[in-house]
Length: 260
Image 1 (cartoon, helix red, strand yellow):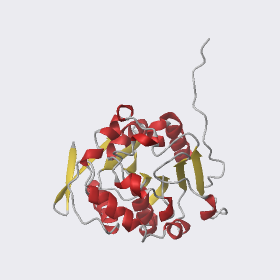
Image 2: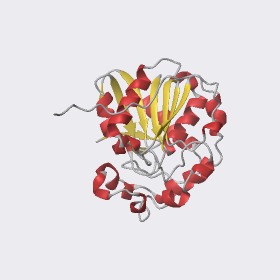
Image 3: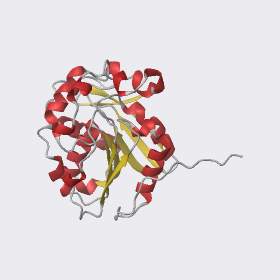
Image 4: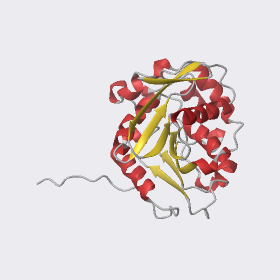
């Protein structure tokens, strides 16, 4: 386990691979750990970084969590410590909101921005499910603890205040306005059956933006990077190889070996 000190507190992070830097930001449920397989898949071509936000995973608690700028500045401090200036960003849930804020403030630093389960509007959030930290109602949404060990071992580490207070803070963020100002390629990914963050109403995104693409995983819930890992990784790699015009980017079927 690796750690750095930010504002006098320990921040846990992991890094793998070589190449151009890619930073992964986790969401409200879990920690950096559910990005592990995705990072390993990119490690042959990229240097992948992931850290735990304040109050999540193995990073120290730092309440209150009422201002998302604290998380934006945590990301900025992490990048400075790692010596990273320009990078690609892959994010999920809370991390997607933080990423959108960061990209809006420092657009020249982001090469490509991929956001999974980004709540464009507060009404998209299932607060009851998220505030529970996944416990109790988690099983009702079709997840089994032994199915995704990357989640099961991490949920109990989260400071409950970190979830509840950041959910309140999201209501103060104008995410559509932030996205409308971004010039880099932006890929928004949703699970069509997500019980935590409702799938995006694409009317909220300007259709003339050739560098913004919305893709839904029809069978996925809140964690497409775990539930449909092969499809997710293929989409992610295609996104990295695409140019600025994302209109032709699409979700492809999994490749399967033919058997007799």
